[in-house]
Image (cartoon, rainbow, N blue to C red):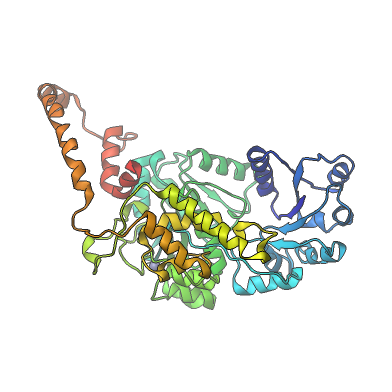
Length: 509
Ligand SMILES: [Zn+2]
């Protein structure tokens, strides 16, 4: 059994629900001494995860429970471990007490987990929890999120494209999350957008002073899709998981680089959602910001690399649609992801090598798993952790996803999580299942064209009757008045098509 110490009740409820649905085992959340006592007396033997808040875990009842659990305790995991230094000082002092549990159960390993740990945070967590084991870093790069830094002009002009999109597309506007530093600024932005959409409920505001019922209503509206834009302070934070937010905007310099990364992470949570993170800023804000934030706001090179470097990740494969400093994005200082276009072909100076497109993905995956198992058998120190300690499933998926871009050992090494001892064998496996193209000027796609052309004549035969019917229909269409409710669906769609070329591409894909 694993005890998970987690700070957020709302997050825990969701994790317990998902764990119970997805696995055959049971997870419980123990909140308060009564719940702890009840579980001690009558534990469900199928329980594998016990969630506790830091306050419960470090209470007298919690300590007694952890010292003598009714099911054998194999691990204590601390989730959102960056809260230990960030909140432990004064906000929730129980975080600082978690380390004292080690004296109660000296033989049980502790594991700290977080998605945002700078070098300083990692070091503080290790000290507090007396951790001496290895630090394992996952890939922090969120490939489906484009990062843009935009010089702010005025709130009205910065958000004009969003206003227009809300007016034209209404409930079809992509979901936006806009962060502002204070409640007052949130309200100013709320009034601007709310006026533009005439109280249609598409825009909501979220800050710490809202009642729990109102917060819940805003979240449910965003989840259901009735609310398209939420204007929020940092109160809209951990534990909130909306999978299809397409655009997160930090309007003004964030307080820290960790906060910037956490805000960015609220976009595109489903890997299928292409998303954008935009930081609007002014020169005045550079001067006031913390040096670490100012360095991102003035960074001349790749913003993604600078951000990841700050979080302790130095490797990352170069990607298209990376950031505003890398170029290739055309967003015209817009809030809208849809203004983004793929880079023009001219931008590519030298042709890149390409691999053959085959259906061998499954075979390559199998081969990579075999190579991992072989390596695992050669490394006895990993015997308690399983083959994933050598290379995780995520890394294998990443290799599969990017295999067409991996042509050299250096390319393979740049993929996060690849063991240096496996680089040669991985590249050989990719070469085996996705060989390099020998002649790239003769793409096989052309062979597929004739059958599509054969399909055209029947469609043309159908045209004359439709043309005969057109004149009367045109006469009946009344003039469109934008002030009277929504334009007809067809018009709205055609307008979106002009505005959202990328969305159309992704929809078809
Ligand atoms: Zn970049």
